[in-house]
Length: 360
Image (cartoon, rainbow, N blue to C red):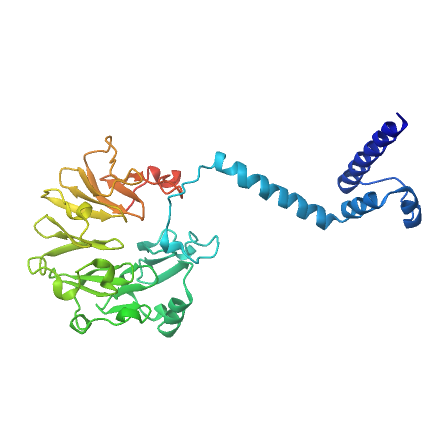
């Protein structure tokens, strides 16, 4: 009986000691500290170890952090559902950061054009000056130092996986890109072209469209199946109005209002609806869409992330459509923005300050 009582007292004494230590950490301790010898006489080795540990605030903080991480690893998946099938190869080897959406203040209210790459963006203001933000890899950073963008005035630009292509106001096409697959080399037939209408920086490849409707493509076209400069269909060349690119396809809006898909031979992409009077096109990595003059949006491709589920309540006066990696946006004639697709980065949540404002 006495042994049980003594064990109970020791246990109560241990809990009381731990409680007093935490009280001392946050509320102070008015008790007179015992000398080391006095403590050793009164405490067992286990108590001494625990007391020393509890007196070390760094160790206590580390313990709290460890326990929080341990508990979170089992509970956060309930609060924040985890999609085990999700992958995004463009985000490989990218360190954490908070600057991916840090637009330069000089662009505030002064935007002419914006293009978003895999981990960075480029923007042109109304004076033709280009700005960059986000995470730019070391190779592209070196290229931008070799040929500073500050010396040019730009008409249009596009950001890709890890390169930039742009057109200056005097019609010169310039690229900042790695030298693999000659991505950094403007094709000879394009070097003297001064009537460039559009540039698109894709997944290690670039596409340019001229005012005359000709398309140029170079870089790592291995992703594009059998598509490269020499295999662009003859009935396409001279008839291109606009292009959009995905990882392994190029979708072209032709001047007659029809659509052509070139690149990977997947039936999902090649099965283009029989469309006419198309006024705009867009693409994600899995689905392509076309906007016709009657305000309807037509989608085809791989049915992922609800990308094929075009909202049924869209207005009939839609004027443009654009695609991110896994979502679409469209605008009506008043500038109002509508979205659908994947919302893992809250990309479908239109900011309230532009929800009713006019966009371009």
